[in-house]
Image (tube, rainbow over all chains, first blue to last red; front, side, top):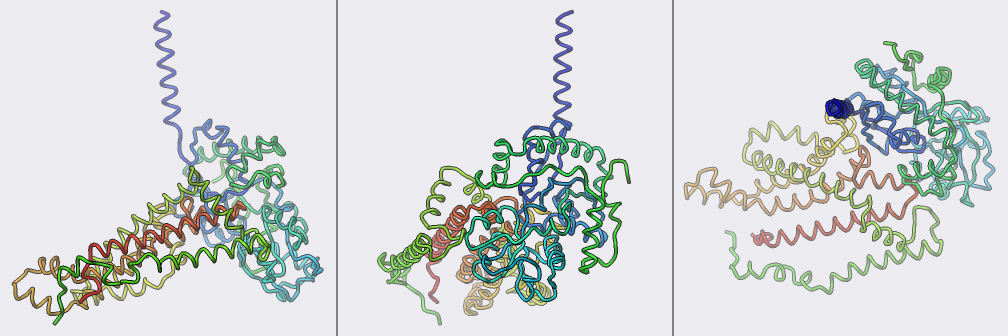
Length: 313
Length: 272
């Protein structure tokens, strides 16, 4: 009797484990490995995705050119994308949905920097000068122009140049540009540089609750794999909670240093803020309005329909 | 009437063809120049003539490069790039040689295919990647395709010119011996075209390497291109330049190996 029970238990265990192993389905995710991805990497490291029967295949990329084309081409299931690209895609008939937001804090981390001693404090001071963003017509460019307008400047009187983030500080020092909208890692470097100064934080002044990036997927994929998406979001949510509760800890710093390859000393200076609760329609609509103002969008798109919620077609 | 070299000339090889390059002394001048430039770099960085986080002292770069030898991301990235470059190079060159010979010999094929080839040739790699992503995805298939494409053109161009430049006497001689087209191809056309093919292959070697790195910078998640961009954003310029150093060394070695191979296998190169 006992032997039979033991045998039955063993059989159950084996069946259970093989069934579990067989259930691990793959999700391919395209990411740009910046610090905002910490919740995702945390969830992977802690096994939250495995608990949901998911195996994540991350495809890191340095440039944003891959995200949405890769989704459409079927190379990825989910991509890290910014809201301007997403809205443009929808306007062009590419049916994608925004799945989940990232940690807040862009408002406090991305800054306009300029050379010290030139008296550049507002958009008006930049009239007639050269300003750099990393890519024209992306979210950074959009909010930079709006900040210039809001602080008394006129974008039509300013020359906009494209400079990659790593080169912005040097281009400033070489006087090839007069100001630049920089991202967190290099803003920290600029603040330590005696020749440069931080002018302002455009996101904070234009739209403090802005959500520049989201996880996106095509509606087709979501409709074909509703359960997978739900499980992904559930595991991601656990990662978000872990992230929120570990802000300021060494564990988080070494996690971020690991996947970004940044020195730990620099990671310690990054400001981490909790993850946004959900993709906010209001913020998306504000971005959409800015895009219309700049001519990036000819007409409004269905922003509400773009935001994923389980159970909706 | 072409002159025929004696076997002795052929055996003496490279030293006879180019007596200067044969001696080790002059080659050192080249390395001396590089060393002087690197010294300038080191001094300018240490003394603050150039202040930038992307101008680290050369000694930092060398230290990072040596550290990576003990096992690090850099070597893995290098292997990934070399692997892809090699596969793409082989495919592109093979197709280049075949099409070069075919189009060289067949007027009909030339008229049919040459316009397409000439139109595709000037399209730069970054422009061709986004549409290719839709068909080939973003993995190795895409990169190997692009590398093959880049390797194809110099090999094809050189092959087709080589075929066109074959001394007609050779073809006529083969015909006198009643050699069939296969024998003519293998024993006359191919050896006569090999010097031109070799020149094309040598160009394609460095091109394949460069395009491999470029495609990884634009659409990559592994390899040297991706590593270079990653190190830029990770504020590790020493590792970034160490990667460039490895690329330069490998490129140089590949080129020298190729030249040595050419000399051994194609002793009739450079002589008519």
